[in-house]
Structures are given as C-alpha cells and as structure tokens.
Length: 329
Image 1: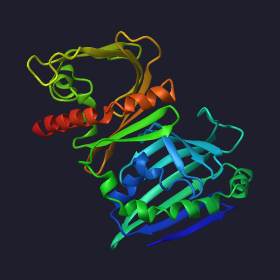
Image 2: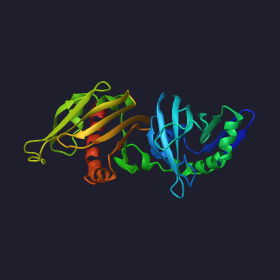
Image 3: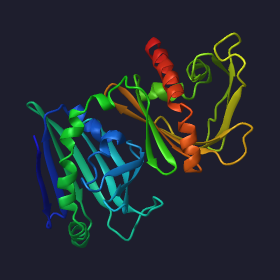
Image 4: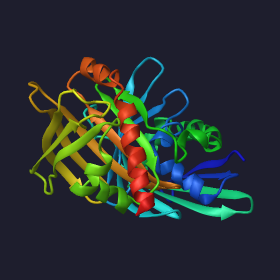
C-alpha cells in the first residue's frame, strides 16, 4: 500500500501526511524509533539522512543531517515532547547548523505522529503544525511537500526488511561521519534490565569481558555526572589469553538520563592523547532493547584503526553473554 496523501492547509497552518502499510502498528512505529531504519526514509531519495543522535523518549533529542547529490549538507533536529508507544509521538522539528545547534533563523515545527491498526495493516498520519503562515510558506517554498513524498516512497522497502533489524542479529557498525561510528544491537531484555546491566558492577564483571579468557578485576562505576569510572581487564591464568598484558579504560560521566541515555569520555589507561566520547542510547523495540553506541574519535585515522582491531567481534561476544544473563534472570 503506497503513500496516500501529502496536503497543506494554509488556514489550519498544517501539512498532513497519511500512509497505509501492510504491517502491524508495532512494526511501523518501531521504524521511527530505530535510527538505522529511520534514516533510510526520513530524507528524500536524493538527500539521504544520517542520524548522529536519536533519543526517542520524552525530553530526548535527535540530530541528523541530509546529504545532497553534490555532497552538500542540510542539518536538522528533533526535540521529543511525548511518546505513547505504539500509538503516537510528538516532536519539535527544526533546522540546525553544521555543529548541531538549532538554527533559529528558519522555522521550527511541531509534528504529531499517530499510528492506528487497519484490517491487514496500519495507517500512519503525521500533522506538522506551523506558528505562522509565513513559516508554512517558507518550508513549502523549500520543497517540503515534494521531499515528503520522495522520502516516504522508501518506507515499503524498509518495512519489508525484517532481517537487517531483527533481535538476535550480531553487532553492526556504521560510519556516520568522518570521526564517528554507530554500533547497534538489539538485546533481548527490557530497557531497565539493559540499563542496570551497565551500572551493576557485579553483573558487568560477568558479561563485559570481550573474547573468552579474560576477567574484569576492576569495575568502578561513575554514578553521577562529573564522576569518573575505571574498568580493568586481566587474562585468565591458563586461559587462551594467558600471557597477554592487562589493560583498562577510564573516563568521566558527562550526561545521564536513566534509563535511556548516558554520555562518557573514554581513554585507555597509560595512553596519552585525547580519547573518545561515547553516547549510549537504549530504546524499546520489538524483540527487546535497541542498544546504540555512537563513538566519536579524535581523528578518522584512529577510528579506522580501532575498527580494524575486530572491536565489534569482542562487543558481540560480550552482548551475547549479557543476553544469557538477562534470560537467566
């Protein structure tokens, strides 16, 4: 079932989009909560979107940019106002500068998304509210209606692709900018369970071990913004990593919004130079919790070097252990 309508109403100061799709409401709603899926249809076909932040919870923020055919970029943001899964959500949608800050010279809009079941599928409706006729005309002149038609035409392919986003799929890593990578995995467990697994030292020592043959003798957790943490690993005597040098990481807790988001710095103990900034986001999705970790490196070269070490393989081993812990619980 294709996109149904895109209409503007100058009297009501709205643009309304209606689409019907042959999937359950939960599947359609979930496509908006998962940045891996959303960026495949939020931008027009010639202007694909990349989400560098996506906190799909009240008070959260999403940041994205769209890249044009000649490499030009247009940035935007969402401020999440309300979420009632899988019925509706509401955001403020606005334009942003290259650094992600709000561009107040262009209009911001309030967007209300609703989802309702149909026989054999679901209906999606979004109503964008503008503060003035001038604001509405500005985005119409910028091609918003045509852009929405183009963007939503990609929804069918996203909804049909169940395998790429399913629970049980191994850790995936996606380059989102010259210095950023997004690591994603659906963990079978609730948001609250996965959050606790990242903040309970005894539990972390059982799952955050990477490849077999390692222990985690030091797990000092940062509880409040401004606190520092320290994690250290050592090889198991007689194990497959016996003889390897111990190592560890330390850093500071920069932001915390339990149980959905936290941001930390990370530096390898004993290594000089700038470290990384790690933004962890947990989102409830069908099958469990989508864990998204956006890592910002000081340089592209360091990003590529770390990815080349097999980082995601070790993370997958750890997350598989985490799932076993949650299933056992």
